[in-house]
Image 1 (cartoon, rainbow, N blue to C red):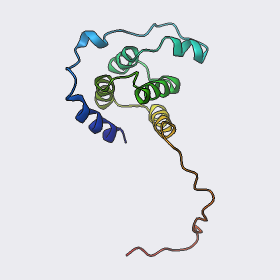
Image 2 (image 1 turned 90 degrees about the vertical axis):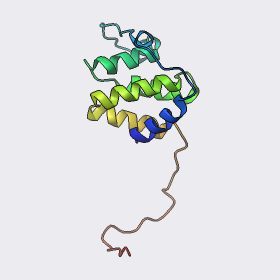
Image 3 (image 1 turned 60 degrees about the vertical axis):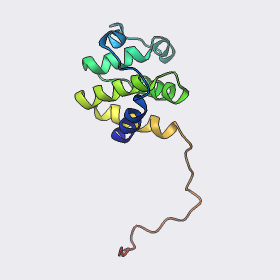
Image 4 (image 1 turned 60 degrees about the horizontal axis):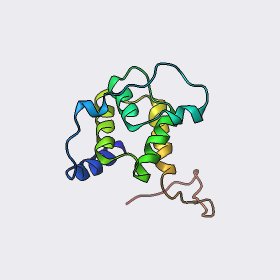
Length: 129
């Protein structure tokens, strides 16, 4: 999923100028915050990108959710998403970060309800041709 978003973003980046290190060198404050609203108030795309580039601590679910939501609303530009995805490709993600990213991406669009369809019984064998 990350690679698909990365490829789409990379194809759209050709319209933008290349990002330089100065644009994303802002670092997050080292003091931990206790409430999610105060944590969100200090988030910027530059802080999120720098945090993943430095790879000293993993993103929180709130940070990832905010970043994806801002990207969908246009607050995070294509080149910023590309820089973040490149940092992920270079530094990887923890299982918690991956789960938070997946959940954020699912919630970023329309979620379909399939509960009204009867699903096949798991005890039945199905032949695939």
